[in-house]
Length: 135
Image (cartoon, rainbow, N blue to C red; front, side):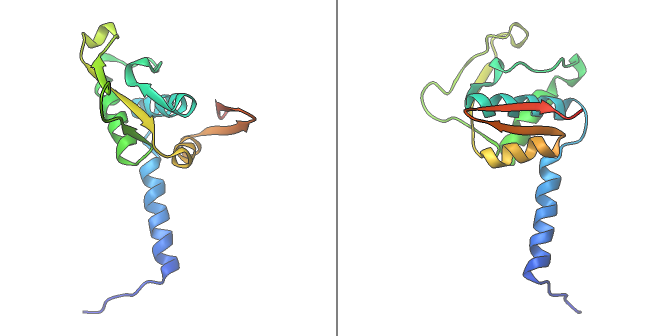
């Protein structure tokens, strides 16, 4: 059996392609919710997930909120806070007092790359971030 050896440049290219595919979500509710979460967390750094203004989500797609949070955490953009005062009852009426966690920005560069890969421009202004969608 013949094994093919790869150069470090080929390996790096494969890793780059894999990373890009992980941070480029499929269109639809998961992408819209994920983009809203990343935009909010870039400006506030530490947030309660029920404080984020999310786009309108149909009842059939409510599971997309949790999926979006898990995917963002799994790829390293956000991380859940651990310790005292890290969770509470939700203030959102539709959640009926369900538990909600506090998250923080884990990697700013990855968050900015995520927005760019999902058709959002990231403009850096002195002292603030201006995130506007592409036309």
